[in-house]
Image 1: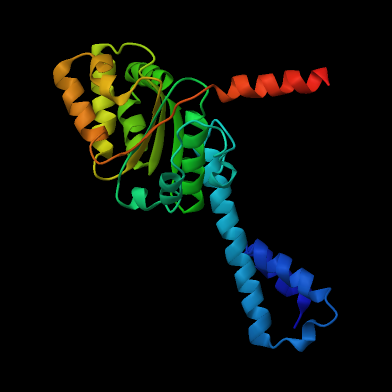
Image 2 (image 1 turned 90 degrees about the horizontal axis):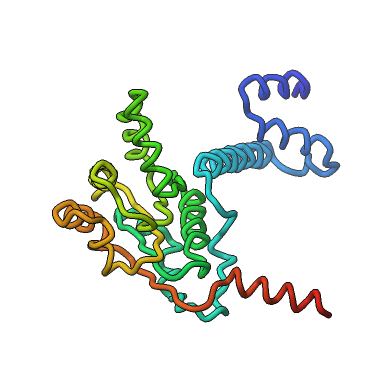
Length: 251
């Protein structure tokens, strides 16, 4: 085999994994002990692995997750009412296949956003697209998109994403336009995509937070029914980390 011309052709075809694996094979003294089929299989496996890795990196970059979090790093030791069996169930991403939602509620600092990002990270690993959004900022950007004519395009992009995080739900009252935008987002996703919501406000009070009774009924009907609900409790993890740091500093 003409090694260098073949290597150049692999690069031209953008088979980066195969070209790297071929270069490595050439430097291995005992590589001739493998058959042609075995060597070819190793080259193909390397190409598939590298392409999968690049796709994952692209999905994670586009997701713009607020935290670099993963399911394997979840801390179950801190007493915050986190249901380990439910989290293990969610880690298989079957909830995404079923187009279900996840609602994370609890006081500030208990790790709601971190857990949401861990779930989104797992979804990216499983081949789904994801995106992190702070709900107040998302609603502001939608208002601006009306002015520049990009509203329909933005809404179509949101509707195509497999998993969206709506962080900081219920921080401030919604105006009429924001309620309608929220309903449109959830209507587009209802039965076809999954949504993760984090909120300091308990689910039973969301109706009051939304404001308009009719729109609140419509929004919650599309979001709450058939969703996984995790209500976290306990002391702020950020406060706990600060206390531990201060204790270490005094030693």
